[in-house]
Image 1 (cartoon, one colour):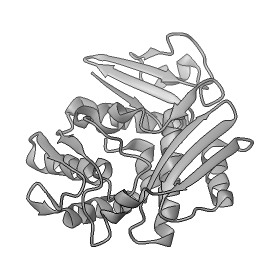
Image 2 (cartoon, helix red, strand yellow):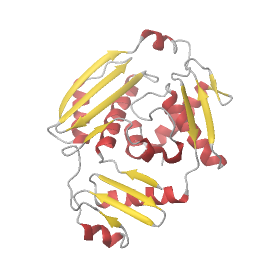
Image 3 (tube, helix red, strand yellow):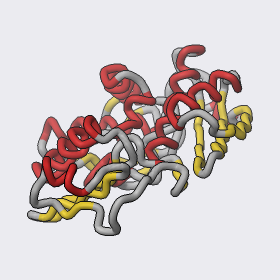
Length: 261
């Protein structure tokens, strides 16, 4: 059983906005320190950023309106990163989180639903949620008639409550609330989105997931703030592996669209 949501789901809109702010930070420094939380819904977008670099409110507003639509009111609060945490990174990249992490191979069922979600989103680019459970495919797709979905998937269970509009006008979204969709069986603690690469929630999660796909085995790791190595590798090397992956997918905002699966 696996659930996937598309980039127009309110929680993914929050993730994408958070990712866009991290992208902005990386235009200013090679290794900025930033953590962003986003809560959006019903015409409002609340953003809190703890950051080592100042972000332009106008740049943030433009990102919010580009991702969430015109007319969304921004409430932005920015604070400097805690000096003790910041000091942890002064002499080089060290682990920026305590945490446990797991990378698990993606199953055929999970790949199948991820492909279905992407295919449907290319036709219906509005809020959608999809579940696969054995032979059952459940499609909840906003702004689409049932027969339109059945044209593609005749045996699917489509919009059990009937036609719905979805989006942030009928729901709220928050950062890192759809990690099951983003990570499948790799979910443990910590969120993927809205953080820089020094944070283990980002880099170690990506590293463990990539290693699991290569080895075909479940990978379990742990680390603490200040650790200089993880899984026998210098933490700086873990960061560079994650950086290469983020660059490959097109940045933190693009990464937030679908996550790892």
